[in-house]
Amino acid sequence: MKKNPGTKIYLESAGSLVCARKVTELKKPCDIIASSDYFVINELLIPDYASWSIRFATNEIVIAYLEKSKYSEEINSDNWMDILQRKDVIYSRSDPDSDPVVTGLFSHLCWQKSIAKSPDYLKRCHPKTRII
Image (cartoon, rainbow, N blue to C red):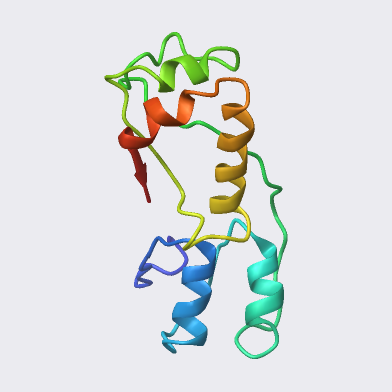
């Protein structure tokens, strides 16, 4: 910002597919789309709405939380399912319908794979899930 002090950056969060549709269908002006899925840009935006893309990261599933989040000091790769099943824990995940290609679908598939280890997981957790 030191080089361009008058520059204003407007951020708008949405799933990758929703972002692409805002440009392609709603004709919303956009200078940069940062997507968790390069496929959306390469297949839906290039060449009509974008001339190039940079693949700068790869996909991984993460559980993100703050230091002040419940059970933040004890959650780990071995007990995260148990933590999420606790009645006082509320969590969210990406919506596979609005972000189907990678993030939403990938998080959904990871949940499904984890459910196989704990068949009653979905019954206990689904009502507390916030889809974003």
